[in-house]
Image 1 (spheres, protein in one colour):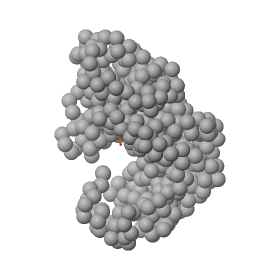
Image 2 (cartoon, rainbow, N blue to C red):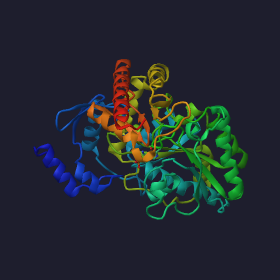
Image 3 (cartoon, helix red, strand yellow):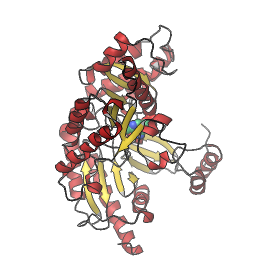
Image 4 (cartoon, rainbow, N blue to C red):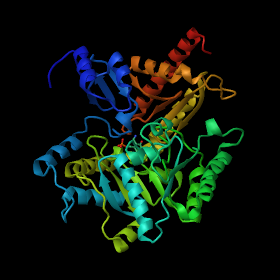
Length: 458
Ligand code: PMP
């Protein structure tokens, strides 16, 4: 790599690199922050600043940076067999072994996997597989898939359609046909005077209303994230997922759990559906399967669907060059081995998650904070103008971005979703590092409060 100054890197970046989910012109004006290296839970930028990465990269570097077993696994596999495909009656040993291991860590009714390179491709696979399933069963009218407003399922045509992000639907003629949405189980915004548990039932019943409106014999599947991630770490009431499961069962509709963020220990179980109490037919995964060291995603296929596709199906006309990429699979195997050796999932459930919850409960006392939510190693801090009435700031003020700038300037990566500040830190954090992060969050909240006061926005 050539040695250049930060300004030189930024200029080259602006000249040639179109960044994802970015206003290109605006970024060129501001200049990117150039990240140069990382170790454990810390990053260093090109100016030598040390930054605590409370977002695990992009919800993916669950085992932290610099894990030698993952690096070695990639190098060794690249030497032996960097790539071979899984088309035309061939297979590779890392892909076979990973499929076996995934069947071990997933709930027992998942014995099969379809590999992709990303979460978006996983959800494209879901759409095609769900529709194929109903076709094979002689019910081709079952085409409609129900997602949720403010859900996120990726950025391909199908992924962005399943998701319910209005900004994404506004570009490119989305959603594609036969995908529709219900509202999200976001008690703080939509719960009104109902208790959280009452609201959980209300929000789940929106699914039943939608099924009846579409016609039960036309609905193929419902898809949701156990905990909405990109939507703002929205932890649904405990009553929500069991009621969703009951409704899907009642109408024979397939349930899809998008585990791209919640899978691989994030919520304190291997998969988020186990924490939330649902038994999905399909699970999309990506990110944490390799701790983000190399792209890999896929769909775990439950026995209900696998049986039909395998025994009755014929050819499934779908797949990718990199479905079962041996190097990616070798890294995933090393990652899961390390997770098991270090007992990471139990630690999240019994030690780290509870400690994060306790530290966030303290943040809830801050005058700017309307609510906090955590689930395992993910958390949200909702900034509000008036705690008592849950009154939000004018969205044009972009208070979340004010707070994010203070995070940036104080060595902390936290994400702003509107005025909801979120974290999903590495699962290898120590209790002391959770304290370090919580202290930093307290500091940036104080700085944000001071700035809002100074601007007269409170
Ligand atoms: N589903 C969920 C729940 C996600 O959070 C994401 C990515 N943030 C995706 C799907 C898409 O994954 P990818 O970006 O790997 O395509």
